[in-house]
Length: 592
Image (tube, rainbow, N blue to C red; front, side, top):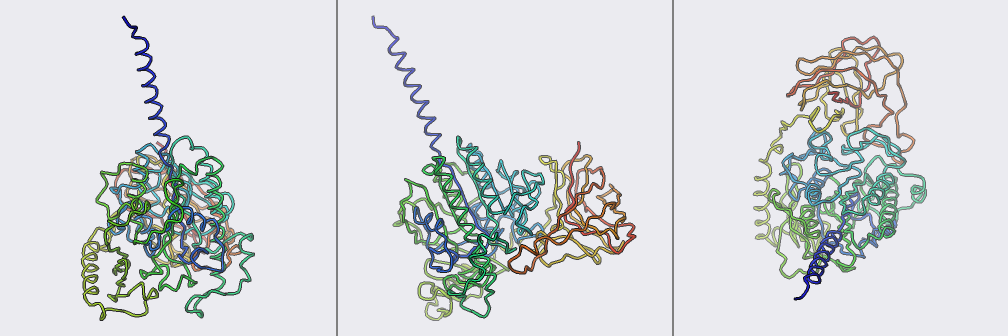
């Protein structure tokens, strides 16, 4: 009789091998890094023919994988981010603007970060979020284990600014773009044993036009050799600063790619790079019409570079049109992650195109939407927001409408635009109202930041700029003035109230009342804090937005808040000086 032991040993060996293979398969799940720049145009790359700046690392990233010839995003920041995160046109997601709550992604949207987190990935976002600052819109509530950056669409200072780290207020370290990249590299190194999904949402070259001397010195006296097509409208110093900021981005991209090489992760990591809209100034952009804010070609065309060593052939050029709505299904399918259960997606997986499989790719139309106008892009044509048709192969500058030459195409795309607008204009907040309150004390967050950006000023209170992002309230001089936020308390309890303010010594002593429904808290401004405006010396170009300050953090006291909706109201009952204070943020921390 034969012994059963060899058979048993073999069975155990096979089981061990199977377990080993399963572990290996799991270990081979690709990492993902998505890099998104802010206000960088298609023309801000030497790869695209710009001879005035050098972007060798980005150029090499493009050449080492796939680059898309015609990739489209939205006209402004928050909508593009919403489309990337959801795979859906932003008008469906609750996003309808860039500030005062209009940038928030609806709670019932499923984000790419949630899909990867459910699949066992370590998820992190570093930089500009711009899709909601408070829970349940905060990144930590939307599938990201780690957040370091800012929730607003614009940040007022780029050198060691105040930032948000997983809901806590912290101080940044050095130039913000460098700091964000450093944080991303540290996170990758710390989590390299498990698959990670890292979203590096860089803040530049968005204004303020601040960049360290190392980058500015090259450009400060640069003559213009590649001009905007309307030369007399170009601000050359703004262009110089933007190019310096783009070279700094390129340097940081190089650092991050080198880190992957050092850690031996390059072959296991999908790296993706794109922009959020067209350039934030009148500068060279390949002769295309439009810039940031426009739904013409130059306002919505972006590069898309995708590298996956050993999987995507270097030098791959993808010619079919594609869009930010395509990124969620593309990344999920590349990583072989189930994304069923999401709302119906507008995007398509670009995985076949990355493999060079174009034969069965469908003809499609892509839509850009802003200010109740729609532009439709097909492979050859663009119908602009005014119904004019352009042949983008023969006329990339959109100078000569061809409605009369191609009347059937014009009518077809006009009908598509009208149908799309009718569907999306009637959705939720695109109708012109927003009934979503700002949340205080969400059950999953002890700290709630209520910034001036989201408030309504009454009486003589103003902002120092028409741009509310990263701004503050000032000229508060009357007891009839007030500041109001439409809020909802998510959990009843006692809340510590802190103010971020400035106040000259001569004006110390105002009595402040904070109220919410039946609850009231009264306190006084007892400490002078009157720093100069921050950023004036660092700006390379005079800004239109508000400057920042070094805000003092003061405890107003503790207030009892009950769950429910209401108006959070701040007013002064006594003003012994000429003004109350300048106010940046109200911070509420649940104590129970």
